[in-house]
Image 1: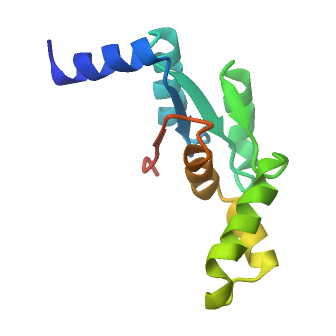
Image 2: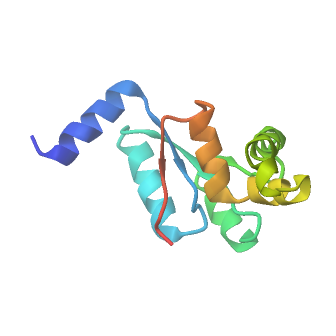
Image 3: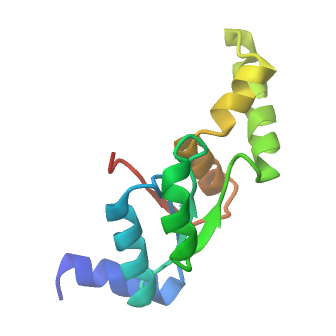
Length: 123
């Protein structure tokens, strides 16, 4: 059994939730849909508030989508960022802007245990 087959089988047994931070990218949507279709993982797509053009395809994919611009957990992330970076001068407004970033939000979902792993870096 190949390495990829072993990883896929292990993920499928665990029912792993995988967050994808770049949901506006067609390659990411295709990969997430394939993981769902093959039963390897349960994808979670993070929508990019700055890339409204990609939302329609992600939302119509049938996969779970989260939008940092409307998700209530974004406020918890912003508060955490301020607590961690206030000494370095991070303001509440800047933390709120950072919290809406898809990569930052995907990492937050991983940190709080809402997902099991994160895939990013396609763009």
